[in-house]
Image (cartoon, rainbow, N blue to C red; front, side, top):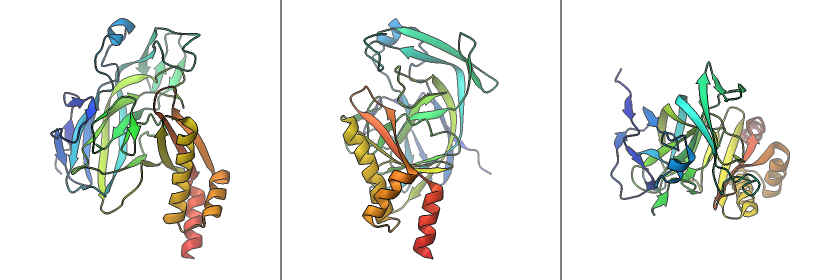
Length: 299
């Protein structure tokens, strides 16, 4: 068996650029080790962090042989392992309570026996997830805080080991990039960040030829997800619901009103990240409900 390839954070980018030369090439179905650096690039104090010119480092670009515009790629997260220590940072103009608690306020967190240990001694179980996962769009786009149909800085806490993210392909090879691992993060990251950390992550990337999708989708153990984004939170959440209804109608054969009803009964609309220019949101529906839709359609 051939050795699994690896890309390190020495190949890191801050912009998704369709003209960027790939750092590594892999085949569809191939596994790859991805070494990511934390969003703070090891900095643990506010002043030098605020002076950092770049942020949102992502490892890549990764060229997937055979991926062409109009296809989609599925990224299976086989394992995500935090490295070193982690940091949460309340930064000026970040978070819902930025006026009452303007910061800066750093918290360095250690990892031990599957837990994140806060300075107070509070221990929280690790649930590492990848914050930035993106194919490259047709135009140059920042890796930090931006998101769109290509994925991007989606901060979806459910993207843990054993889950999958499906993204559209816009340029040859997809030019995949990822980074911004969180040892733990809550929906909304209400104080500004998760526990930012470096990671060793094992993924498998598969090309779905001719499978055109309007935006990111995710598959977890119990749910199917559609993701959306936008400057207006209400519109972004509405779009994630619309994406789910369209999926049920166009790909599962449901009638529009029945699909809309099902999203209201077996679905949940949630927020990944807000208080920034682009809100990242998600809509989930029970895979148990989807299984029944499939049975009714084929039976």
